[in-house]
Image 1: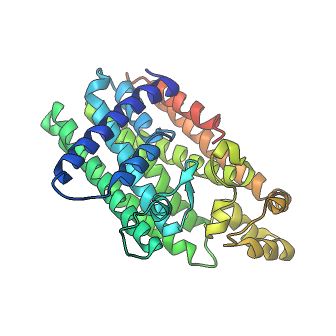
Image 2: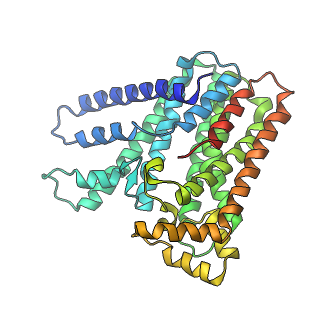
Image 3: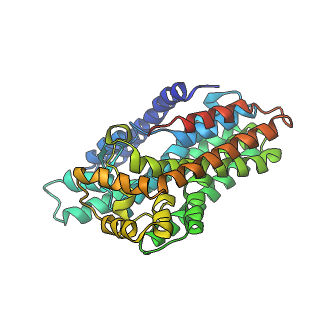
Length: 357
C-alpha cells in the first residue's frame, strides 16, 4: 500500500501525462483552423497541479485492500475520478461565483482576464462560457478514460464499476441541485444539511470510489454494507471538517480565503446551530455577515468568536468526533469477518483526522 504522499507523487505524474496527451490531440485537430485556445491548456495545467487527490486515493486504497495487484491497471480509473472532480469544481465555481480555487483564479475568472483582443464579447460572459466548456471537456475526458481503462478487467467487473461511476455522476449532480437550492433559502434544517453532505461528499468522495476500487479487484459484494456505513460516517465527518476549517483555519494552510461558506450563504452545521440555538444578538450578527462578499481581515476574529462563544464549534466538533468514532467502530466490527486488508481503511481515517486543509 502506498502512503498518501507516495501515491500523490505517482498519481500526479500520470495525471499530467494524460493532460499533455489530450493537449497534443486537441491541437492537432485544430491545426487547420486559426484559434486562440492556449489559455485553456495553460489553465488546465494549473488546475491539475494541485489538490488532495482524495477520491482517487480512496479508490486505490479499496482496490489494494481487496487484492488488486497492479497500479498500472487501475491508474486510468483513478485519473478519471480526478478529472470528474475537477469538472464538478469548475462548474461549481461558476454557480457560486467563486474567485479563487487552489490558490489561483477560478476558471471563469481566469478566462475573463486572459481574453484575446480579437474577441468582441462581454469579458465576464466569455469567461463563464469558456469555463463551462472546460468543465464539459473534463467530464468527457473522465468518461472516456474510465471506459478505455476499464477494458483490462473482466466484462462483469467493468460493467459493475461503470454503473457505480454513472450513479456517482447523477447523485453528485443531485447533491449540487440541493446545494444550490439551500443557498437561496434563509433557513434550513440539520436534515437538509445532512442530505446535501451525503450526496456531495460522503457518496461522491468515499462510498462510490470505495465500491469502484473493490469491484475492479473482484471483492465488492460482501463489503457493500461496510462501504455504505463507513463511507457515510467518514464523508460526513470530512465535510464537517471542511466547514470547520473554513471558520478556524488559515488562508495559508487552506490556500484560499476564510469564510467562503458565509460569503456564499452556505448552510452548514455550524451556521445552523446559531440559527437554531443562538441568542438574538448572535443570530443578528450572523445575519449581518451572511452573503457578505467583502468581509475584512479585521472582522475575522469577530466572526470566529461568534462561532466559538455561541457553542457552534463545540457542537460541530462533537459531531465530527462522533462520526469518526463510528467509522473506526465499523472497521473494528468488520475486521474479523474478512481477508480484506482493513488497515487501508484505518490509514484513510488517520489521514482524515490529521488534516489541516
